[in-house]
Image 1 (cartoon, helix red, strand yellow):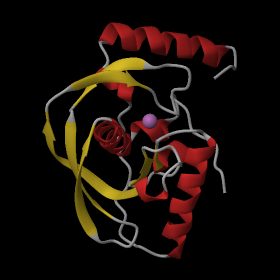
Image 2 (cartoon, protein in one colour; image 1 turned 90 degrees about the vertical axis):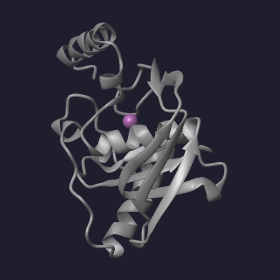
Image 3 (spheres, protein in one colour; image 1 turned 90 degrees about the horizontal axis):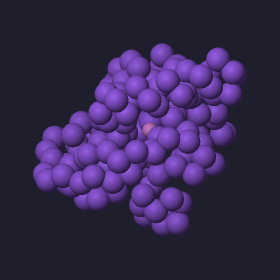
Length: 169
Ligand code: NI
């Protein structure tokens, strides 16, 4: 089932999501829904709060649906190591229409549980490192906007507030 994407301004995006303790059929269904919703919105990553569900789950597919092997599920993820820096344009399905240069680690290692509750660690580079950091941030109530300069952030949020007033957000 495709869920609508929650946008900036909704408080579910600003709070820390709950840890996942139970790995049942309902969780598997939710994960499938998250992949479906992410592909429908043409994203490379999606965190559960972005469909209004405040739980520590993220899905990532840096191939954008082209390679089934690149489907990744991160449950209760934590970034445990980073290395270097990269500055590339970054966007977010919850902040549509705004893409900004954003500094992230060049390499990031995430420790997480898979969809069955088995722990794994994985190191990503480039886009994957960016996605690990971006999605883990979401689960801690943080958007990529918080990594921009306050001037840029204020410019964007002012534009969004204007759109909200006109019911265009
Ligand atoms: Ni995002």
